Image (cartoon, rainbow, N blue to C red; front, top):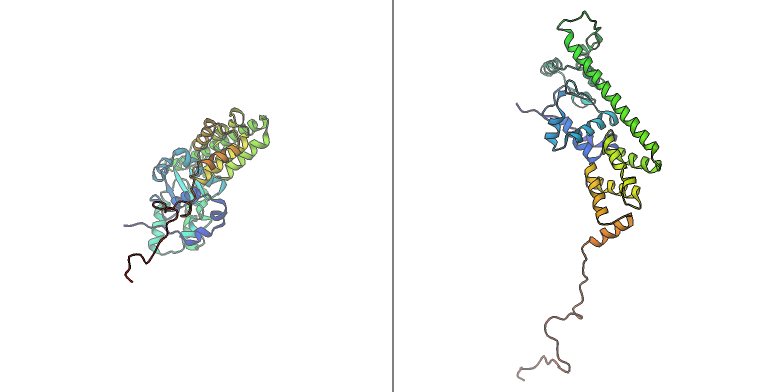
Length: 312
């Protein structure tokens, strides 16, 4: 049986979509709402490798987008242990109609969810009371966070243990990211021109290059000291602007631009602009027919008689 997913036209009027999302963000969000793994309940199992394959992206790009949607837009939640993804506003956009067939489908899919906290996450946006009550029955406190002791080794406790283990792994990832960000801040403070560094990082974070991609930021910042540019900050920002204009928000693309400029000995923004202007095709002005007459020139002294050859 064919499966459909509804995307309302109001999607494009949402303030988040209009003002905060890059074109790549919008494409990724539509994929999260409509891909073949989606379910009736707004919670589904999918791997980052599958996303990368479907979208034609690298795993690193997908990871960066997931981080952006979880921590910046706050529209999804993902459990890396169970590989389950939940969409925050799914209930508000999709769960409006009840009835036995719909309720049976929802109940069946809710039974398959391993991380019960994701049910609570989606529940917050559901307005229809009938459906909301069904979600609540699957995420009661005793199911989400049961007391676990060393003596509790029953089979019923195992799914809960897996859920808690997933949450702990998530906490570890968050702590690791905080440490990386702290290390980056420490690196920034030790650099001589802090204002330049902050401006580059703010541009990177605000334009969807990967908020948590600390390693890429460090490699880009190295161009401030290790390049031959006379205006390193301005050159880096110009390269990033070009990457945005071409929707190529990747470190390798930016570094490729910077390397090409170095190879061409273009060391300032003015030199780059002048070089690009010279590369534009030259359009030659057409000269008038008077300066370039077609055919052979008419000899001087020649008079044209339009009546020649006619009989009087």
